[in-house]
Length: 328
Image (cartoon, rainbow, N blue to C red; front, side, top):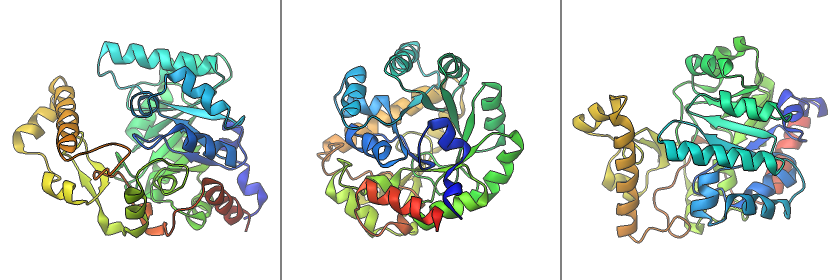
């Protein structure tokens, strides 16, 4: 590969130097981490719920604070599933504020991205949508998106079911840039994804194990020490399978829902109630166990990329490693 390998549809859309997205994370997306990814040449993605509720910054003020840390492009994640009218109103407000503050790159998840795409396109912005299979990609294309983020089975958080190459093959016929999300934790993996035909890579877990991330040191050390086999899928955190490290708390809570819970999760009306119940229950149990999202967290999201993470390293070093691997 060569320097030209860094010139992809993603770098042109996001106006960045390295086709690397710092994935939106709850609760780990502190503003210093997001800004550091952008400053290093990739693009950091702000998760508004994380920024406002975990990191205690009013959204506009948080964006302006990040502007004191970097003048380079920032992105925003919009979770647009229609869970409630109040939530959707808040998300629309966050998108409007982001546009007013100069954000032009959006990553949408779960719902119909049309309204985000229309607002972003009106001011020259672009929208990439998280997908796990062709069915959701087709809906995203109908919603007017500019690119797809292919969430594969090695991703942290809400992982998909397809492998990295299988998912790319499934999504390429849509004719949009495709970004690899899942299983990439070093420069070698980054370069391999570009060689395979991806327009870029989204990393999440790798950026947790950095000085810029304000996750607990225990969480960071656990990522460095973990192997692929230490990552399990738990249905008992949000009601949807979430990739997490198999900590003692996860083992106590179990990873599977019972028959009644599964039935509730299948109902179009009851699934939202059940997911809310799981989330509230998880928070209560973790608070009972002296849980704090920034100190001593023992429900730790992580993807299979832990296998390639060998140290806690600065964000700039990680982005530089990816840049140099692509050029090698």
